Image (cartoon, rainbow, N blue to C red; front, side):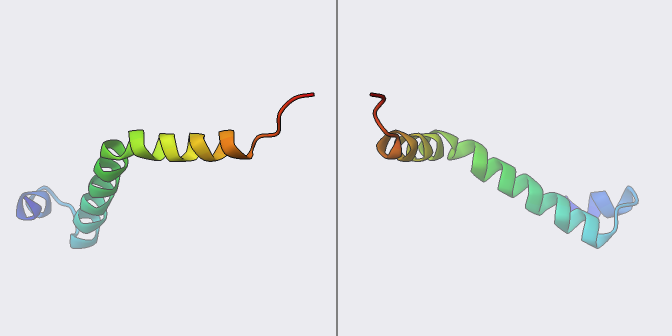
Length: 51
């Protein structure tokens, strides 16, 4: 895939950066439910009860 991007005019650095961003976005998307639960649970556990 990288050779095709380079043939289209992308530099090696641009190809590497794009691939890293795609991987990061894929990781975040696949783990978003777990992350949301953990972040949400932390907020709920730390929230004070209204008086």
